Image (cartoon, rainbow, N blue to C red; front, top):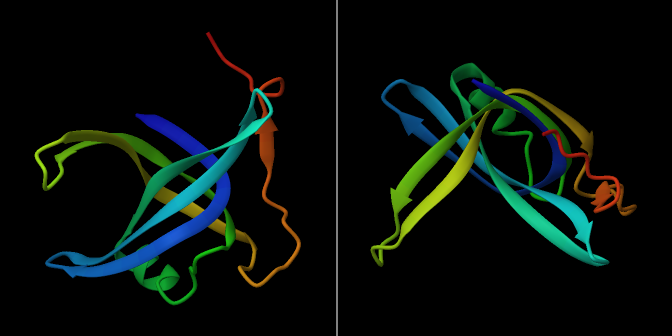
Length: 119
């Protein structure tokens, strides 16, 4: 099991009713600087059941959030037949750090020098 934590801004938010309960999918953008240029990485985040129902009316695009959970690979095929692989974070914990309406940009950016790599 891979446990992951991230801080970023919510992109799109979609909810679904499934046979086993509610599902909430959203994307979270994280920023970092590489060679002086901003790079944005989008991570797919999923919530299930009661947690999805609780966050459905609260989460909105632009909010700064802390998310922790289990990362799993997801493989699928696009409509054009292209194979795609992504990491999906199944959230165990979400904390809203700043509302979308906050005008001050408090989104953290990690520079290439600050990025720590564990070997």
